[in-house]
Length: 199
Image 1: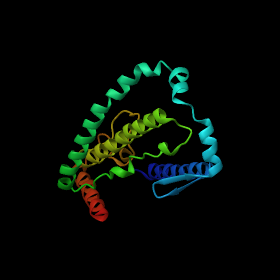
Image 2 (image 1 turned 60 degrees about the vertical axis):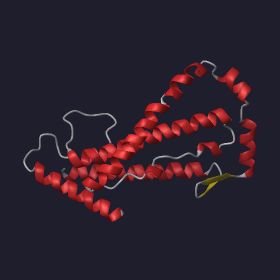
Image 3 (image 1 turned 90 degrees about the vertical axis):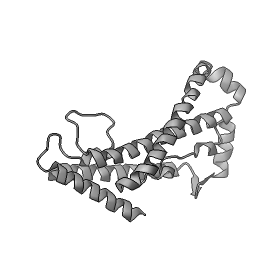
Image 4 (image 1 turned 90 degrees about the horizontal axis):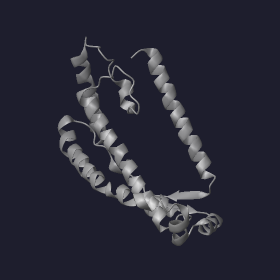
C-alpha cells in the first residue's frame, strides 16, 4: 500500500470519527442521558412522546394496513436469522482460538434501546427490536467473516465490490504474488498479537 492510499485511509477514519462525534452532539440536544444501558429523557420530552404515541387501533387500521399482509413473511425470517446466529457464534467459538484470532464481541453489535421511546406503541417497539436484532446480527456475522477472510485470504478483488468491509482496505493488491506467503504470515501474526492483547 503506497503512502497516498495510507494517507487517504487515515483521512477517512478521521472524518468518520468527526462525523460520529458531530452526530452524537446533535443527538444529545434531544435531551436524554445515558446511565449504563438505561436511557432517561427529560420529563417534558417524556410527556411529548406520550402525546405523540398512536394507539394500536389507529396504527393497525389507519397507518399502513397493507404492511400487515407482509408480517408473516418478515417474521418467518427469524428462523434463518437464529440459525445463522447459532452457527456463526459456534464457528468463531471453535475456530478462532485455533487460528489465534480475537473473537468478535457480540455485545458491541446488538443494541436494543428503541423500546425506551415513548412515542412508539407496543407493535412498533417489537418491530424495532426485531430490526435491531437482524441488523446487529448481519454486522456481527460480517465482522466474523471479515476476520476469517483476513486470516485465510487477505487479497483485494480485481473489481470494485460494493459493501466491502473495512479490513479489505489493508489487504494485499490483486495479483501481487511476489511475497504473498510471507505477507500472509505477517497478517496472521498481527491477528494473533491482537487476540493476545485483548485477552
